[in-house]
Image 1 (cartoon, one colour):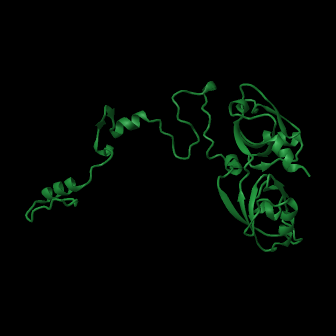
Image 2 (image 1 turned 30 degrees about the horizontal axis):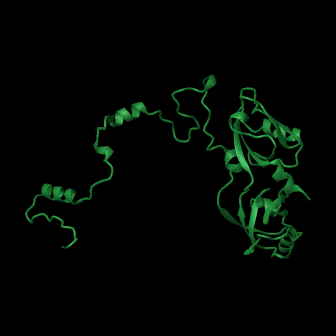
Image 3 (image 1 turned 60 degrees about the vertical axis):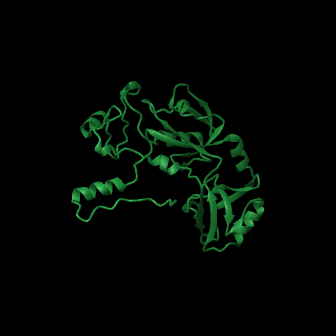
Length: 264
């Protein structure tokens, strides 16, 4: 017996309506109903007027949250997906390739350190070639000029950079695997609810944005809204936080890892 499908062919003298019906019958059954053709489906009213009336519409580009229940104080928390600080602080998954060069003195502005058989960025000097290509403290360097860095010593990495071409050093990098970001919202007094001491989160106040969003003590601050704060005095970091706007994204790293990475 043949397994071929039998399709109906309209008669030569068939009317356009009959041809349309035949064509429609030949179409495979749809997995889902065409809601545009329905005004009612399983008890739900699907008319355009009904949908528009029941949806809380938010204009495109708006940062407001559509919510039937207002947040305490009558204000809804803003959506932070389009926040500049969040975008600057983003830790992207996967790998990326960068092309680094040397300055007129033959320097890259980059210091690497070997940790657990991996190679990590220990220091990036401000306005250096390394900073200009987007390298950051804590980035993992997987390859230098096509050679795997796994198992390299710190000295070997230093020599590889020294011998590399001044015009182009190709690197494969993973964004800061030991770090994470926490986005906080300031309260009416401009506070987010934590105390910093010697670069670390020393305490977190109950009921604050820091507590609600999972900020932890014994973590160092690496960035505020994507701006590096490593090595700054606490009062300078506090000033940056004060001027950072109502939404603040912190990049943090566990103290035990940070102290191991900056060890000389």
